Length: 316
Image 1 (tube, rainbow, N blue to C red):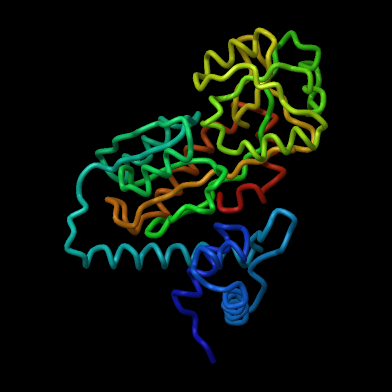
Image 2 (image 1 turned 180 degrees about the vertical axis):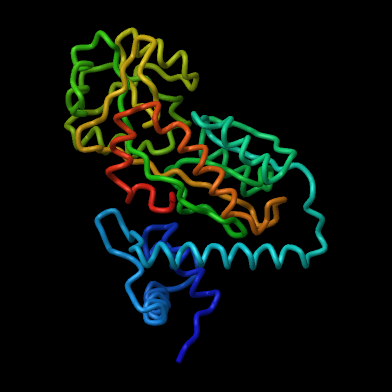
């Protein structure tokens, strides 16, 4: 009878991170049938199904979440053990890179518990953060899915999905739509939009597709990466997409989009040759704690969060 091996644990972890057997197979350098066979072996050994196939991809079952938690602990411990046998001295500063996020300070504070000397870099685009990660300029990174991400070489990097976050929309408090609990994206067809500079919009394809599905092409009138400037333009009558934990106030209101047509995956990545090698699970826990700290900024998002655990299956 076969026994559970490290490759089986890696298979389970990668399927959970990618949300797809096909994408996980590509990342692991396997064929899809070979990875499916590994998954069936693990399921026979543990005595149950590990993933449900949904329209959003492979979602861990209750048993799957338990196995996944153990798999990550074992793999992280093994990586830490291997790191201690190498001659390379990895002591020193921990370099952290991320896109602008509302929980930045809280995350840096958590990382300091793992390494006292944390040095942070914030960049406007997720692609730029991944460039720095691949080049070894940062050891830990937080970024959103972006067009072309699947083509990146993330060998030597522990990648985990933090959350799948729905986009909300920001409108002026004087806008007629501000009185609605939710806004249909099609209602914004004739509005001027505020977005980051074009080269910094990570999921342009997804954004334009969502608007096309609503029957219009967005009029991208203003481009700024500075949050207070964007909020000022919205208060003056423009509209913009907003991060789910964004807060109503200063002349704008944050409203959910009907049907949540735009969803963004947020990832945490840790290099295996970093000062926190073998501690990717702890890095993820820091990011999860930091994210939790901003949930109540938007009560509507908090209600959606509580009702949709599938968007954050690894939070405990």
